[in-house]
Image 1 (cartoon, rainbow, N blue to C red):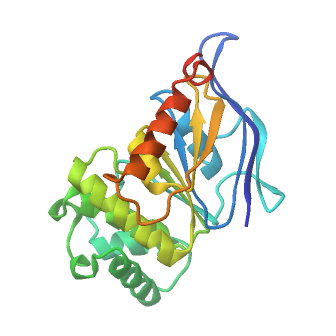
Image 2 (image 1 turned 180 degrees about the vertical axis):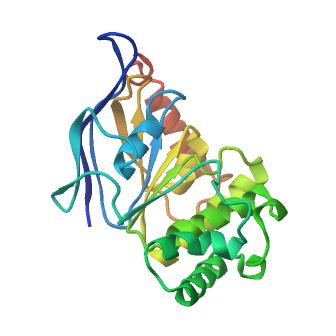
Length: 253
């Protein structure tokens, strides 16, 4: 399965005939089971791009294709994970995961079985009957990952999911995410503003300019996994990425 973003532009109207361009003429493809990070400064349109791909926001122009077929609106082959978890506080961990399955028509008993499978996958099988307020931030984000995986999408769209977590928890969840990705065989598009996070996770980086976001660099990451942040090789790739994104074409609006 290949996801293709073609000539995507998004403008937001402000007053009268004026508008603000958030992203401009973005084109790239993502291969089946590839892990791609979208990297760029705050306000460059990363979240807008992800929301358009997810069908949560219409594009002003351009198209999104899966295997050459143009798609529009929400698509069951995609699931999005947000930074703020968006869990229902009155539902247990398991019932948060089953919610989307039941809405989709799955029988409740089967939905509970599927939910437990994915809670075990993210290491929360023993917390199924807990409520979100009883969990740490990292655990709540793992519930969000399990909920997204449970509907069995082909593509996971992740919008800075670890951005609000402390450094140690963030590093642990990055490692766990890679383990889940390798087991679940999903395609992932992961938005971040952290070079370190992008280099640690991704097969390829797509770097956006400041607003309006345009692609200024596409950088393959040729590092074997598992990656060690303290290694010389990791430091060299990180330095290369920092040098590339410091070029005028990546910093000028």
